[in-house]
Amino acid sequence: MKKPHHKKPLSNANKSPHQNIALSIFSLALEPHIVVTCRKLVWFDCFSWRLFLARLWLGFWFGFGFCAWIYGFVWLAPLFETTQGMLAQICATFVMSVLLLLALSVWLLIPKALKGYFGFFAGLFLFYWVGLSFRYSAFPFLIPFVWLGVGFVYAILFYVALFFTARIYRILSLLVLGVIAPFGFDWFVPQAFFAYSIFGVTVWQFLALLCGIALLLPSSNTSKQRIVFGVVMLCVGIDFGTKYAPPDPFLEDQIALVQSNIPQDLKWQENTLQYTIESVFDTIDSAIAHSKQMIIFPETILPFILNSENPLEQSVQQKLLTLSKDIVIVLGAFSEQNLAFHNSTYIFANAKMQILNKVILAPFGERIPLPDFLAKPLYKVFFGLEEGLASANVPQNFTALGRLWRNAICYEGTSRKLYTGAPPYLVMISNNGWFHPSIEPYLQRVLLKYYARLYGTTILHAVNRSDSGIIAPLLFGDKIEGFMLATH
Image (cartoon, rainbow, N blue to C red; front, side):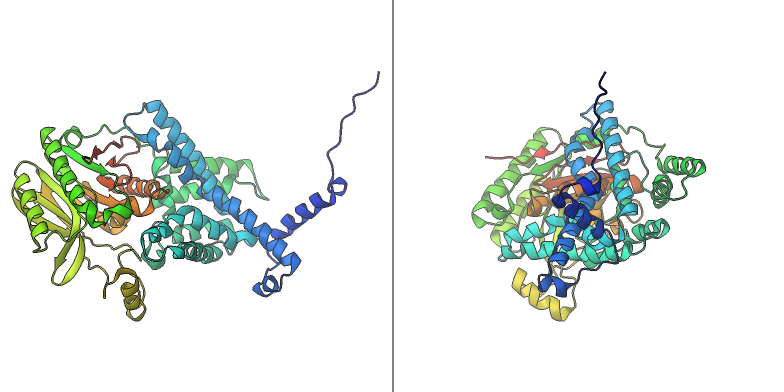
């Protein structure tokens, strides 16, 4: 009887020349001692270009592996809402946890030769949306340059953070990166990535996770004891105190979190101003009809200086004061105080008005974090102003409905400084129209969840161009449902 013929796997020698060339160039791309210089690229050295492109390709995929969790969250986010069953929330949490362990594994394993390339693409995957705001400026052609700038900043940071392959070095470097804020931009907080996972969000739990993964990943001295200790460290990182937190009936029943959908290119046009004003008043009337005690509108829902002496602003202000006898009104607009302009929150209650100003301004969007001799010409070019917006010095609170509320306006709500004193409630108003559509609202929500869990703060978030809702201080219990802005 003839024996069946089994094909042997091809060795490298039996592969086609093209396959061997591809394998060879990718193998060489992982060798840190082979350096690609700008001089060789400029002179179109064939080998250097092939090596450069191979490292770009590998850096792209390693970068995606590191950031896959946020793109997974885009699809999983609806499952973390109170309207979903507990089983759906648990499954979503498990998937997020796996993606995040993958991200930490990539960080610890990334070959030294790819560190800059990896950083470039990881920065873009996480923060490409920063440049989208230039669509609404006079310089939309700057978007690709902003992308390059973002990529190169994180390429440099990751180049240093991954300079050595020792896992203890990379564990410590990732912790340090979490407190570095290039140009004041503090959205790269690695422990915040775990906000929607079974793991805790404290530094010590994050450190335990990193150590556990480092012990479990393949190494030259893998042993049973090492594996057992790695599993123990992962268990230390689990938040065993996580439980379902039923939404506060008072917050759900008595407060209307407005969700608007005003495109950014229309928001500032004068011919839409009257429409917006009428929509605001109609929405307030609707909230009163639904027996709400407080209504919260998004950031700059009224795109003008509300405390101005102009007739239009004065008439709007007087009507809001009148309506505040029936409901507390919280909304965003600009204000002018002491010859300075602020991005502000207005609180109208019992026919009285209170103005709270933004404390932490968004870098480049509201302030240019450069020396004055460089910043002032840029303010003139980009904003038509001599100076940027002014800011308050300390986080500000207001009292309404018998409770103390911390005020936050968009970007500052994702900054640690706003949570000084661990406020029990934080009212945050945002305008995500600058970055729509993108992953920015999802990354924002992850950061909010992180600070909610870390400080035990319940966050009430009213947004333009993304979902409004209540972010619970525990893993489960988010109520993502906005009170829609009235339309005509």
